[in-house]
Length: 408
Image (tube, rainbow, N blue to C red):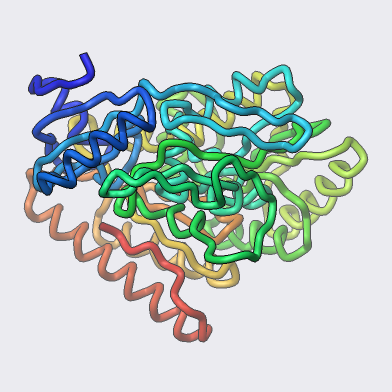
């Protein structure tokens, strides 16, 4: 029962949520322990078989495709929370544990894990892809929140990147192997355990939505809020096309204009100051009054709309596929780059709603296209090349090193 060569199972493990076509492996294995992963890796290494780790399949880049066949390691049966140290604010989990699953487990401890890419992804998969998310502006990405990894290398060797059983908050001894493997996307080894940093649940959380007359004014506001030193927890941007898609998909009624979603965490007193500064900045940029979401259910609905952006974009053109670009720039350059990108999409008649974690200078064009239309595919390809050129040009002007994730 730990091995499958059935076509349905292989096809399920040969694709993710991306536009890329299914590339199934030759066989799927379902190990239950690191010892089984190691033994299987030794067999594959001996016979020179490709190995593809598989978590939940929620990626958007086609990274799980078995381009040369081989063996897919489906890790969902390794689903235990192994060690929780409440007093030290850390936990160790296996690769089958998801983000939502961990936070459900932590519900009565007063702790939570805040890195939130939207999908209910595997935590080891999030480490492998160095996932970011809506909370990154306050809590950082996976790179800042992984303390140790257990990794099975290609020859079956088991490696603990910070030492077996160690949970250091900081170390300057030897090589930083943990950060070498965070973001390696399965190319250096199979992650079988991850030790994560946890946080106390804030005393208060409140979310808000504010609409703006233009993309420029909306993104200018987000940059100014960050430059003012407001300790904001989330600050996301959705353009008018994206807001319209979210309204239709989630049965909401937000004004169809460029809109930031914001969230504040902290004590009641500290949040009053944060909210006051933020409201003043948004008013100065022509923003509307805030629409508040204070109770957990209302906040959940608001952020569900943001997390469903991918599916909301797809629903704009039923039967089509979505293709995401992923650009990250210094926040001072963000307003003009988003404005120029939006103009390019309109000029070339491309359906590409924009959403982004603008708190860390990151935004996505969720392009919806018909992959069977060669003209449209070419227009999208040309657009992504122009977007890359645009980012290079702006960063060269600013004399910055390019921190851009190039579209696949």
